Length: 311
Image 1 (cartoon, rainbow, N blue to C red):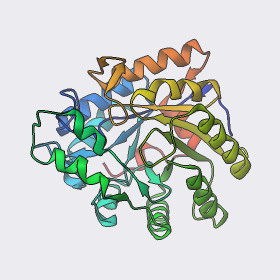
Image 2: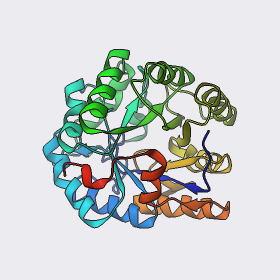
Image 3: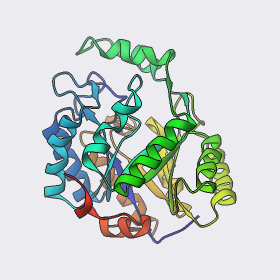
């Protein structure tokens, strides 16, 4: 693993899992997403991971027109690296998932490294009053759906976006097998180092949120990629800050944001993404880590630069 004194903070601003009934603070409209993203960048996030939502009811959307309502606003107001999802949401086709990236030609996109169950149906049991009719069926439908990321889909995303636009990737690994999938594509030179590997813990259907699992994934990634990779860690829900702190102590990077957790601490909802960024920044700095600027992140990850995007 490549270790750096400077730690990249990624902020995942809204995602496609949490619904409006879960939190009044979840950004839904393009102005809300832009404002929260910019404030997260000002708080210390050097990478902004972005999904879009239908501004009428908050459901996930792949419409590039909606993305283009907030991407230029973000670029005008901060220098953070924009990282556009290619995972989208369950039920989206591959063309849906690629639509925004094809339009925006970003420096960075996410890339899920395997097909897996993504169970969020238990969250539906905690909500009594729903704001919109789509929310409960959407959550309960995850009992019967998978996040589809076949070898063919992964290769299509990687080859097209890197080949056409020079886009690089945040490799989202929800289990140990996903590291081996990444090694397969690395061996075939479909993707090139350095690899930003986002190890994800606590999603029902993925690897569990146990500290031993983090050390195991790091050990396997070191065996597969040597010093050609950077660690970043995402802990879902209540695991967000503890797992980010563990990554920091190991010399890794971190991801926070309302996509991953709606809470700031036990019993205390996060009212903005920036609150979570400020909290993990304090933790990082107390541990003696410097905070990577957008320029630092671009240099570490060999990104093409913000001037080379199409928004």
